[in-house]
Amino acid sequence: MANKKRRIADKSNDTVKKGNDIAKQAALVSFNFKYLTDNKSFNFEYFSNDMRNRHDAYEALCKRLQELSCFGIDKLMYMQKTQGCESIPYSDFDDSFKSVLDKIEVVSKDSKLWIFRFSSGNYRIIAKSNVLDGNILYIVGFDFDHSAYDHG
Image (tube, rainbow, N blue to C red):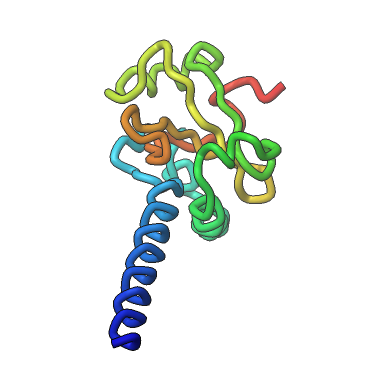
């Protein structure tokens, strides 16, 4: 009888551990490309004539997304911007990028967007968090030539 009770207790502990693992995973950021701009200045078409740099940027992006996906947005916000992210309000973007943002339904003039550096800090991912779940980040564009906003 004691063995039977022990097995039931072990199974309930396993269920709790699995539940905690699921909750922990749910708190991690995930990236969605649904709203990625088709503007060639702010997507990978920027590299249309430079396949070597395009390939290198893709590799760096994949590596960076994998790294970022190990954290929640609350943790990334408190890291240095070179490791985590920084937020920039819509108003601080250059007019050329604002015209891109104005076409994206999840972005409004009072939005803050998240900036993540990749490829040794040379490039930027520009993302907007989901209103209902801040750990879902919509990638809306990339800043490959530092033209989306003033990098001061």
